[in-house]
Image (cartoon, rainbow, N blue to C red; front, side, top):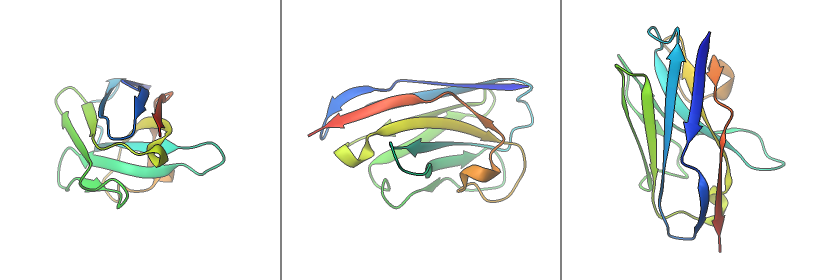
Length: 124
């Protein structure tokens, strides 16, 4: 079983920055990609950013392109999300996820392992 855990959330003001961290452990040596998703109250979970370890390119949601950066260490199955110029609409629980197989990395339904989430609140 693969265990995924996030950290780094918090309460910030509009324009501030945060960096989220995520680690996958257990039987995680064959993971293909890791990514970030978010879910606000009353809304569906949405894609934020993802990074394949092999054979693919990093992808970002249109809403965060130019503001957020995903990075990582594939040898340790660790990823980070640097969030700059935060807006109130970025407020959500942010989830880290891991995917076992090659293919699309933009849809939450195709990820296999999920962390418990970390709360990000951006005030006006």
